[in-house]
Length: 552
Image (cartoon, rainbow, N blue to C red; front, side):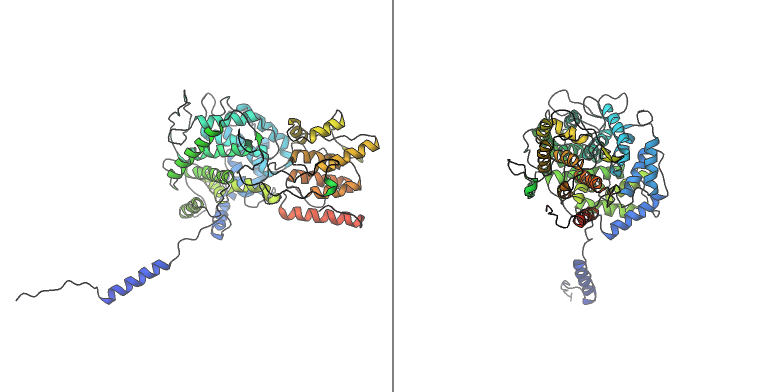
């Protein structure tokens, strides 16, 4: 008799139970927690990499600047060895000779020296910037000698150097920005990506580019966002911020700062986007849309046939400026976490990384990405002001105009009718206002006491002007007059959202008080230092004038 066996539908308990437990445990094990540059595990990886870089150097001056930037972005000051080494290399390098100093090295020197925020470097930075702008091709790109079509890789660093120089008060003429934007628009591949050496289209259709890589596409799209942050494109709202966000609420202006017989001024403007012509706004937006689409589709932490860490740095720059322009910042973006996990997995025991570039360059790029270095550069003004993205940050080209010599303030006053100069200063659309802010301009007041009093009143009202350039010249000019009645206005200016106005107010208070060393060191200002600065100057004034009325 043949037996009939029923199919076994249930596994023995001793097999099923462990399986169920394993599945249950797996279901409750959390996924890897998202990280930021401030997360302990990210900081640990950064410090491990910095330990490697502290023992290394790079043969090129640009490499030395990359190493120094890695340390600068992680809290080391100007006296740190690698930072001093890079400064010395920049000072000694013959930057005006393209054979000895290519565009990469020249741009990196400008970027690094601007980041040091040391006014002693300003004359050299100005000369370097002039050399960089001279090398830009008429079509808008930078490239190697003898190549007339442009190079996306070199252009990205030229653009970044222009941006940081502009934001630290140097003059970057608009045609250089216009030409760079148009070159990047023209050299996009039909897929939305960008290549290396440009293939310029002959008509209105995009021309094919090669090779199409993550690093080059991030570099090009990021450069367009960088340039867009600097300018006001045709058709854009002149009152809006770079990212299209709502303007901050106006700052209430004390009565003493309101213009006599005129309308009350609103609070300081926090944007400085110069109007630009010659760029097709719709075309630019279409290029960014297609570029973003390609990058999102092709992003990977293992880009094929690429210098990976160089690509990561280009992507961090692109993502940081895109966040600002689209007003869409994410605290723990997925791309950052993906890159961190890859770098954590691939770091060598000595804290370095291997890539297409040298271990030193690959490690410096990795530290800059893990530190969100571009985001820190963009947010620099926020830390110095009121938590908003500011237009002009850094120092004006020459800040030596308010120094006491033999008991007198040395300056270079403008010539011409004083009332006319005041009218120019009150007009933020006048092209001369920025020049007045950027050079040694001080409004030399009338010798006649009655006229002088009215001029001082007008200048005091301009301390709360919408234009930061106007505020700079007004504070600088008021500070020239050693009069205690001007102190409340200068104390008010210490709360300005632009650090350059704060520096001018501090110099004025030092001049009036004869405290030539100041009350707080401002070479590397922080939010805490600025709070201390305001507090100590107020204490000084109240001590010598207990009945003083302060402007809040």
